Structures are given as structure tokens and as C-alpha cells.
Image (cartoon, rainbow, N blue to C red; front, side, top):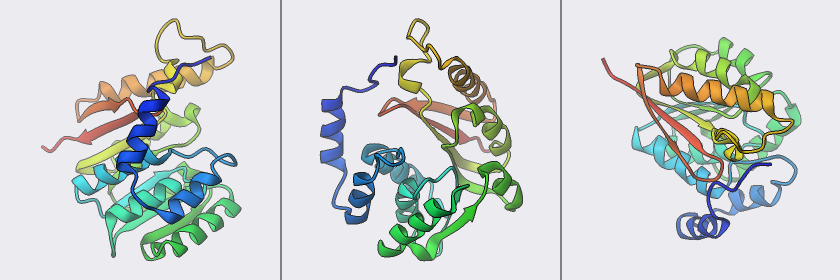
Length: 214
């Protein structure tokens, strides 16, 4: 089995220090047992990164019931766009409800379907593409995303340390296919000359790659 990337006590400290008061996000966190979410510390990280580049158009590949979309919606502000994708219409309806009650519905677009299929139907470039689909799909998601992010924009991906299984010697019994996909994805992003990347080692690891200008 995997390992804790960050000591849970440190995660608790970060959440309490940085989280702030977010009534709807807290409600979504209480429902996290039904569907995995990025959690408060990563959510705030996504918001800060999107704000840092002045993001106005964000695409989520895999949105669940809208938790990460909440943080992106805060970042893009009125008139911005956050495109959510999920193949479960009930989750998307739930996301729309949460975000509507948070006063963020005006900047969120809901798309029901497989994330990469929806991606192909959307036009133009994005300021941020956030990849949180099934991990076996990570390499293909990166291949599709890399040319659809504007120069200076960000490619973000969750769970890229995969509970430490990316490190040789950490038990990944029964997870070999997933681990191989995550490793392939990480190598591809890190080795891309058009991007400069790092991994933020909080929770389960967040890949942050900026598309270089020129």
C-alpha cells in the first residue's frame, strides 16, 4: 500500500491556516465520502494558481460534484468561465446546485459526458486545464491538453505522486497499470520543452506546468 505524502498533522495545520470560511465548500467536504475530492488545501492551491495568472477560462477534465470547480470559480471572477465535465448527470446536477447556492453559477458551464470527448467539442485555448480523470487516462489527457493551453497558462493534475507509488520500492500490488500510467504522464510533462513543471507535494501531489512563452 502507499504512504502519506504529508504528515496529516501538517495537512491539518495548512487547512486551518489557509482554508478560510467557505460554507458551501464545507458542505461538499462533508459529502466527500461519496466521491473523492481534492480537499481544502489543494482547493486553495488551485484557486491561488489560477488567480496568479489571471485565469478567465478554465477546463476541468473530471469534475465530480463540483468541489474543485468551486475554487476555480472563485478565481476567474464574474465573466469568467469554468467548464465542468463528468459522465454522471446526477453529479453534474449536484455540482450546479452547490455552485448556484454559493453564488457562482454565472461563471460555470456544465458538460455531461466523457471528459476527453467533451474536450474535443470545445473550441479555443484555456488559461488552465485541470486533469482529474481516471489515472489510466492521464497520459492521453496530457497529450490532448498540452496544445490547448495558452502561453503562460497552466496544466494542473492531481494525484501525481499516487500515495508514493511513483517511488521504486513502494508497494503497488494490484495497482501496476495505474502506477505505470501516472509515471508515463509525469515523465511526459516533465520532459516537455514547451513547459516548465514542478510537483507540489501536498495531499497526493499536484503537477503544475506552465506553458512557456515564445
